[in-house]
Length: 240
Image (cartoon, rainbow, N blue to C red; front, side, top):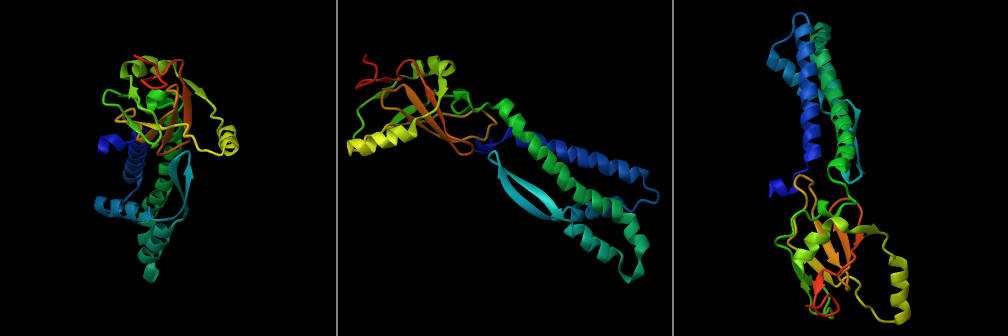
């Protein structure tokens, strides 16, 4: 289950950010004369990370910007109390590195967004359904016709699908004019697996004619693809 929801770009970004933080810590610790005990320096670094964050959503990713260095302020008060300024001076760099580490993590989180786009392009159908071996068709509308999925054709046409803009407004107007609701996507494609490490989970709808696929991912925008041939057999799909 973890592998299914794992997001590789975020893991790469997080690991890289902590490697950089660890490297900076080692440089400061070695260069600083009369450095405090290692465990104390690490503890101050971790406490310095505590901050008030502004959190927002960007391209489907949760991003946090540090604003107020709460940990640094508390450490400054605690270590410098009773006029013991020298003790605060010994730990000051480690505390501020802790606060700076929030910006390092933030910068790498931003970097993960274009990396995600390169590793898992959202205009490619295989990003959402890399493995269709266990795919099956589910009728999502009571008046949908009996159809079966042609998996061989779906695999064959995977690289030939064209992304199109879905004319949702004209479709809605047509429903209103007819006075009757006719489901445009009466089938759901079940049992597919998204690209490994993408962290994607999508609901995939199949158009009535079997030539359209509407993908609603757990993050990002809906995408619509058209095929030259139907991937359905029976009913109004491809016979035989």
